[in-house]
Length: 222
Image: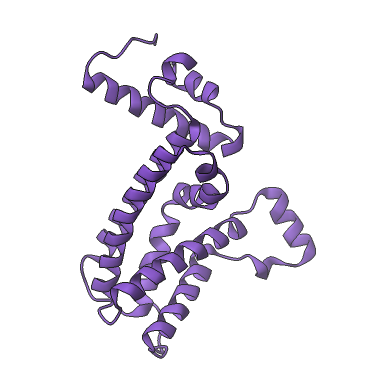
């Protein structure tokens, strides 16, 4: 398909969507550092000069992708919780499973502070931080609804902790074939393990400490 200049707002929105979709496809095939604006332009069937009319850097594109993924993750977690009160075990399981269902979010969160934010413009980064603040407020509300004993301040601290935990655990448990081979040869399999299990156990222990609630005997049913 040849490139046609967008003249209406609707056509411009289509162009934005095409660029975002192209960047997502490339991210499935190569690492973030390997992706260039030129590669995104080719994938979207744009010239590089036309791409610059919509986005000035790949960091701007990926901040937008990350924001939409955060919103999608929050909506998924909201659907799983369904406004119900939960036990700590139930809540921890829901959060762990919702994260595991959004692998691209986990991937991009691990490079957000190291690469994307450092290279983004102040204007784009401020836009992203404002959206993140809104979503953190929404997530804190969901947390307090599911765990009524938790205060808004405790919920905010929990969200920071669980994001940091996810950032550390995901690369440890999402290994390449070479890494897996080395881990197996060195006998370090227990150092990595399952993201979902380890993440759930960590945040469950954290919540029990914050809410001063002892562990409930029994088998998980979720």
